Image (cartoon, rainbow, N blue to C red; front, top):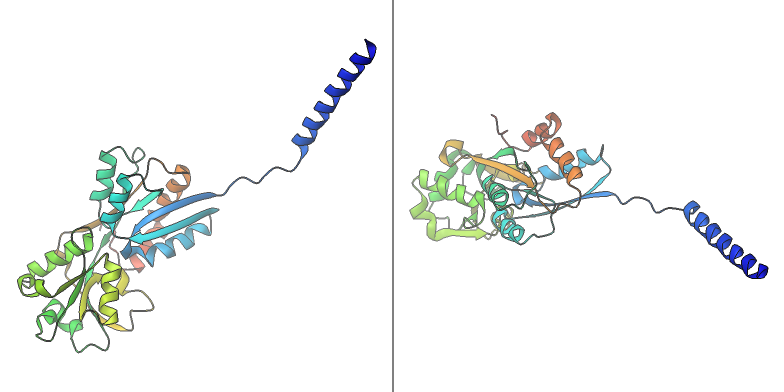
Length: 266
């Protein structure tokens, strides 16, 4: 009987030692916060600059996919794996909120987008002085814009052409990019003679000295208030809130202004 008690005591001691060793062993490091962003194509450069500055003071991994706001909206209706959505308009985030797909008070407006008429420096079109009227030149075969069916910049481009009285003349010549960045690619590659694109993209350092462009007066198309939101299924809502706070801070607003955005309250 004593031997059995001794064996049982030894077994208990071994278990306690094993548990203590497990508790004192190396622990895995906590996983880093991460933010997955779906962003409008006009933010391609500006958002990169914002994230670089944000990460200088926040230990967060941030990944971004750029594309058409309308396409992302359709994906987010099916809960695509993104934590934040930066749209080229405010309506898509509001519609997501109305469907219960965002965190409470997750929506925010961060910028006002602006349009330019753009042509490569090698083009004979004098868009820098004639603006939209240069597109009426008989030599123009194609004009690139974002697809107005799902891209806010495409809808704004159509509105500007209508205001200028050019839409009926140019409608057969329009070629559509899936988003405003692709419209710029069409104009830059020669697939189109010119494009109506985002000012933020025209100011891209690698492009602004290789093209001629003119800003389209902002009263020629509906005001493009750009907005974002944090999705209900965000992996780390607190990290997303931190990024939102930085974008809306004085530093974040200065970066947006540098890349050609008006601020929502201006």
